[in-house]
Length: 373
Ligand code: MG
Image 1 (cartoon, rainbow, N blue to C red):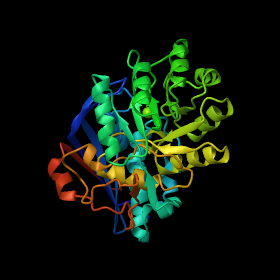
Image 2: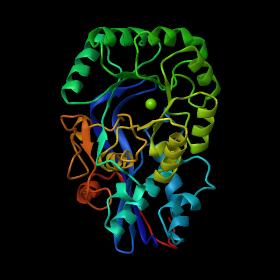
Image 3: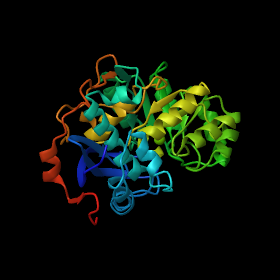
Image 4: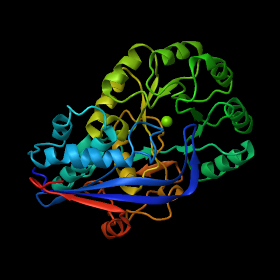
């Protein structure tokens, strides 16, 4: 398949409510959207790089640069036999995983559309519904957080994930466990602690969370292994796992018992499948993380989460939680049983509101083979 044309769009949409983590407070999401055209088929991808580099080093500006200057000119010059070829052609590029994922996932959508099959089928998915949890940001008071949890549970989510940071951690876990003796809840620190803070997690242990996500440094494995030896609660790594090799090493030294897979973080669907397979081979379950995606990124997550080892509820929640304005025609909803249907149409299986994207775009670019970017 020869890619004949790629268009990039920069979108900035307000979030319905601000989202606070240990690293940032986000009120908007700024996303690079890619539209790939090849031999009559079209595919869409969405970058998940936040506006500021608090989660990883990438931002929409670096994504735009890496796509326009480095990745797209090379992909436009090559013939792709299968979607996995994108990963191979760009394997020499260090980092820029979110940029790579943006075009790689658009190419997967393009191949699935050309074949007339749902993306989930092309990826090897086995589920027709995925398990949904919800991630809840930091709230100013515990009472406000408990109210928010109540509203989310009423919407059907199977588990809640709560952000923590130093000073807002044990009190949250203890209050939630007091209010909900049996609720599966987990905590996400986004790398806000050091091994010297182990006592915090030993205290959290008593509240029986299902797991603690990325307590220590974003690039650490060794200290996570040491912390895991000291606590019962399973550690789940997010930021530290940027590749299947990282997953293999983390599992080997006991640094993680669960892995959060985000396609943007690891470089796309093919890289996600490799992480998924490495974890499956070691009996380590995975779940699909979220980056407050707009509709295109959300659709990709739903298809990815249909793979068999995504056996725990992920952070792929209903579209309505995030934006008033949508860029797809069929927003994702959570069923009363806490699941979400995997679309059955070709590709990502939702209608991309192309006119809306063109109208809202703050910046656009069009690339063709041989053309200067
Ligand atoms: Mg996380």
